[in-house]
Image (tube, rainbow, N blue to C red):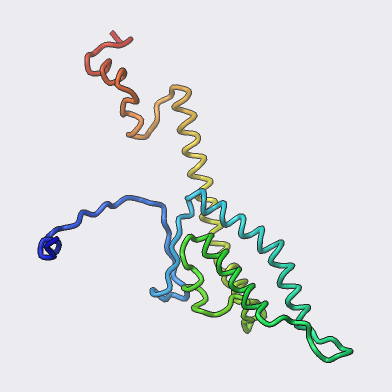
Length: 187
C-alpha cells in the first residue's frame, strides 16, 4: 500500500456516549483511570473483587503479618521470602481484571500494593478507599439507568408510547408495509 495515500486519507470519527468515565490520580493527567461503570461486567467484577478483599485476601494478609512477627523463643520470623511479592502480584492481577486494563501501573507505578503508607494503611487499601465512593456513585447511576430502561421496556410491552425516538421505528417489515400503504386498523 502506498503510504502517501494513507497520509491523504481522512479518518472518520464516531462520537457517541459509550458510558466510559475517566478520573485522574492526584490531578496528574498522565495517570488516568478509564472505565465503564454502566457495563454490567464491570459492576460484577467490582463486586467479586470486594468479596475477595473482604474474605480470602484479608486472611492471606493476616497470615503474612503473622509470619513477620518474631518468634520470642528463637528471635526469628517464619516469613517465606517472596510471599509478599507473590501476594502483591495476585492483588495487581485481580485489580487489572476488574478494570480490564493495567490500572495498577497507573495507580501504583510499580510499587507493591502491600507497601505500607505513612497513614498506616497499605497502598492498595488507600487506593480502594479513595475509589470506592466514586464506583458506588457509578453503580447507583447504573441502577438508575437500568430502572429507567426497564420501565421503558415495560411501557412498550404494555402498549404505551415511549418517549424514545427509536420506539417510532417499525419493528418488522409487515408493520412497515402496513404503515406505508395506509392499511391497518385505522381505516
